Image 1 (cartoon, rainbow, N blue to C red):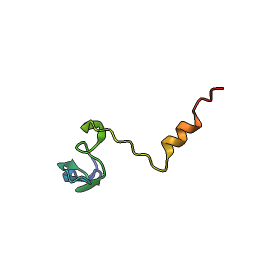
Image 2: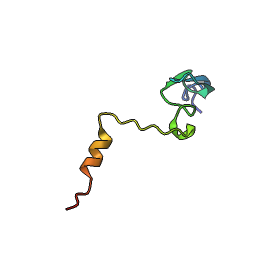
Image 3: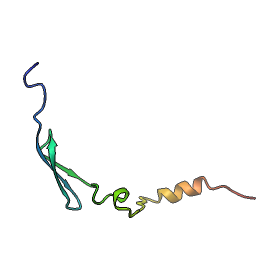
Image 4: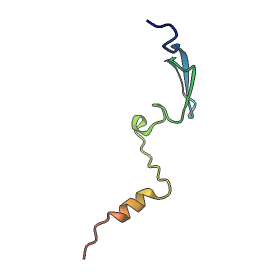
Amino acid sequence: MKKGLHPKYVESTIICACGNVIHTRSTRPNIHVDICSKCHSFFTGKQKLVDSEGRVDKFLNKYKKHVK
């Protein structure tokens, strides 16, 4: 096997924007993420709809059935 082909697999710290810290192993020593399993709505059960620039309303208006 060739030497120096694979990256180093080191201890890693994943830091979420909510403050949650996860210790694991990775090829990168530090990873910063915006959403983790502690603050994601799928895992917490609290659904929050993020509507940026009214895209949901625009979609609903575009495909709304017109009844005469």
